[in-house]
Amino acid sequence: MKDVEIITKTKKKLKNPILICGLPDSGFVGKIASYHFAKGIGAEKFADVYSSHLPAQTIVNENGTIEPLKFEFYYKKGKNDLLIFTGDVQSETPEGQFNVSRDVLKFVKNLGCKTIYAIGGLITNNLSDPPKIYGAAISEVLLKDLQELGIESMEESNIIGMNGILVSLAKNNGMKGFGIYGETRGEFPDINAAKELIKVLTSITGVKPNLRALIKEERRLKQLKSNLESKIIDDSEKKVSGYIT
Image 1 (cartoon, rainbow, N blue to C red):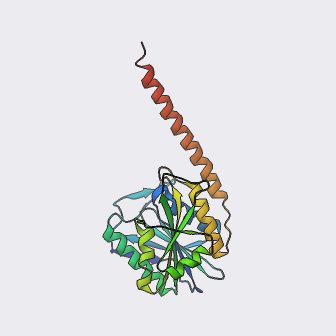
Image 2: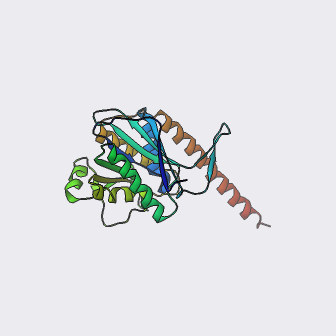
Image 3: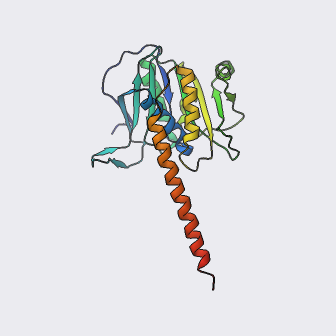
């Protein structure tokens, strides 16, 4: 396998495309938001990205078919055409994350993309309700665009992984780069933070997604979390009762 290999399913002629990136991160916020935004607006998958930098694992689907871990590009026509980039995992090493980010930006630049929004989670112990959204950009001038959307600027911090690297490399590619991150504790898939990011994406793009699938997933995760918490309490009570004589 090549270092990074992008396989397009169909050729697309895009009009002023905007790139939205959201990959698995803390609380899976970037992945959940990007995937369900794409699904909710009826975006079409048009490219797969394979890389030797991804973990040496394969996925077995419900129907028994098998496929390698990968990234995916989705596409939706609009006033500004939308490109949505997500994936199964992030690259395992810093080198891999930079190499994939570099090739992804080169690919979308050749498609005419000049603006990138990367989304993800921002870990905090003081979680707001609903989770607050913070923004960063490659210049103070661009930060004003986020502030006009009501997004508070991040203070001095670090963004780990490709959801930050893609933004930081945008400037070197002659692109506008924005990072938008939702508060999360990062301990469990965070639907609430993803919902808040989707609201921001709706404001930016003017496209409102149908979130029926996300609501269904939210119910499933709530039940799973409730079952897990009940089991932990039950196991704890059993351990305590074992010492009573």
